[in-house]
Image (tube, rainbow, N blue to C red; front, side, top):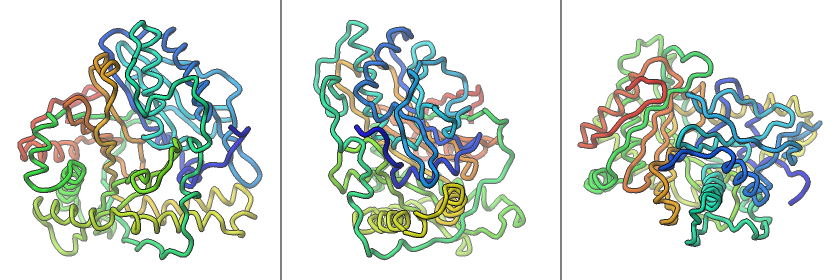
Length: 427
C-alpha cells in the first residue's frame, strides 16, 4: 500500500461539506447473543486493521489536494452513546475516519464516506466480527468472499479509485432536474439523531412487492415519496419556497456493472421525482411511475454519465491549479448545485446481507444507519438479514410526523412492523 493516496471521486467533496450535524458518518451495527468483551474486541480490531491498512488512515490537507495517510495512533474501541454518527469532524488532524463502538451486546462501526461506501465497510465489519468470534473460542470456519483471511496479501484493487479506472470520456452529462422541496421543521438539538427502525417479516414484504411487480427498494422509495407529498400539501406556500419537485435519491452500487474489488466508494445514484404542479397522485401511481423510471435509469449506460461528468471535472487543468481553500469553496457550491439541492431525501439499500452460518448464529440483529444530513433531514436505510426486512428512518427533525406517515403507509400495505427508537420516542 502506498504511503498516501488521493481521495476517490465520491470523497473529494466530503471535507468541504462536513459539519457538526452532517458528519459524513454512516453506521453498521450488530447485536450478539452474549455481552461484548471490550478487550477481546480491541484485539480483534488490531488484527483486522493490520489487514485493512487502507482503513487506518487520516485526512491530510495539502496545498492543492487532500490525501489519506496512515494513522500514527492506534485506533481504540470506545463506548457507544445513545445518538449514533454524531460528534465527529473528519478534518481533525490525525483523526481516524472510522470508529468501533460497543455497548452491552452490541458492536457498531461508524465510517466516514471519505473512506468508502457501505459495501466496503461491511467487508471490514464481517472480517472484524469473524475475528472476534475466533478470539472468543467460536471460530467461523466457513469461507466467505467478504471475510478476508488476515494473512492474505492486500491487493491494490482493494483501495483503487474505481471511478477513475472505469471513466469513459466524452459521454453526455446527466439531465439536470429541478430544485427539490425540503422537509420543513425545527431540528433536534445538536448531537441528537433519531433512528426509528421498523422490523418487518421479509416474506411478507416480498409478497407485497411481488404482487405489485416491484422491488423492496422501489416499494419503500414510493412510501417515502407518498409521505413527502402529504407533507408538501400540508405546507403553506411560503414554506415551500417555490419548490414543487419531490425527489428521492436511490444510490446504486456500481460493482453490479463494473468488475472491481475496491472497498472505497463506488456508488452512484438515480434521482426520481414528481412535479407537484401536475397535482397529487395516488400511492399506486407513485409506485408504478417510480418503478418504471428507476428501471430505465438504473443501467450501466445511463449511470456512466455521472462517472464521466465527475471524473472529467476533477481532471480539469484549471481546477488542479487552484489552492485547496478555493477548491473547498467550489466543492460546497458544486455539491449544492449538482447534488443535494435536487434531492428531498435518500433511500439506500444494501439488499440481503449474508453471513456464514457460524457467524450468523451468534448474532441477534444487524442495523444500518444513513449519514445525518442537515439538508435532507430524514433519510432511509434498508437491508434484509435473517428473515427480517429492516427499514431505518434516520431523522434530524424534532417532529416525527414524516416517520408516522411512512410507517402508516407500510402498515396500510399489510406490513406490520416491530418498532424501536434510540431516543425513546416512537414515530
